[in-house]
Image (cartoon, rainbow, N blue to C red; front, side):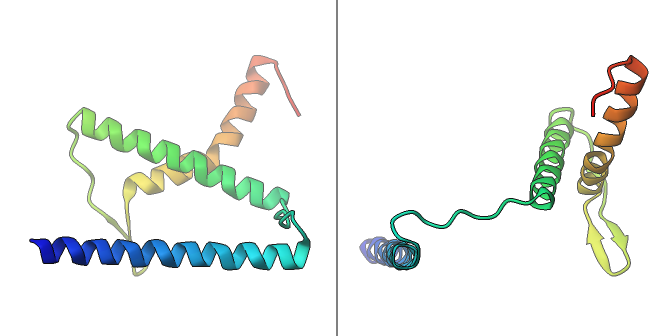
Length: 116
């Protein structure tokens, strides 16, 4: 039991030390190259859009998973597409996230509150 504890303590120490050294290396690199302030990443409209799409799809996926668990609904089996196995709830989530801007635009047209 003591050997197992010492083994895990050693492994966690090695992982922590590795992360600490990595962080020091990157911090030193940024300071030597760019002074005290690290270079800010460039934000493009495409990167913002992809991040938004993924976050919305992830939120829908988690909501659908929780709904299925709460209502004790059977989970649908995986779908084969070409040679890939896909989760149907994930597919519905991604498609809902892709269609969301179009649905919101149509809803705003019908309600008379057209925003650009």
